Length: 185
Image 1 (cartoon, rainbow, N blue to C red):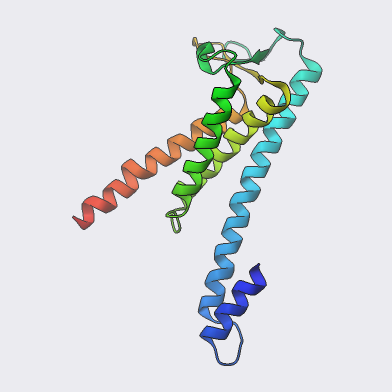
Image 2: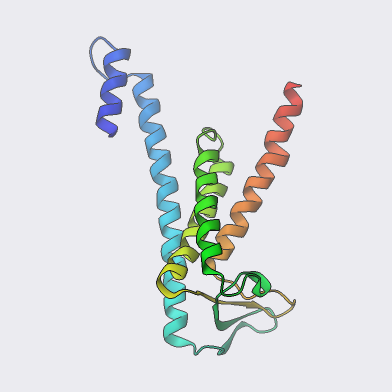
């Protein structure tokens, strides 16, 4: 694909058929896309590896302190969402995941030159797919991280990706894009 894009730009941009500024721009865009894909794949891999380790080494309901009083590992099978919302409603989560990924694709198309925004969308994608893999293969999600200092749902790496991704998107939209919009108006 990269060769065909480069060839199109080179033929239209330079009589000699060599590299042009336009060719570099297309190549640079492809490299960025590959970097975001690598980030998503890496985060999905970390999520799945941590879940596999917990399943192999910590019994269901088992507890192991990581940082006493701060965070521990508590292995649970989660058939719902945070605070047991929609418990056992796997069809709901399949639909929500497909809708979330469609929204990310739609938002991605207008996100060139917005690295913070794209990083957020990348993490949302990784988190959605990480939990989706569990739901499809196991009909539940393996959760393990428990905050010991606050009453908070037990979560996993995919949940962290989703949370950080949403925060990055909101920060971009409210603080950066909002400021740019006010500056133009």
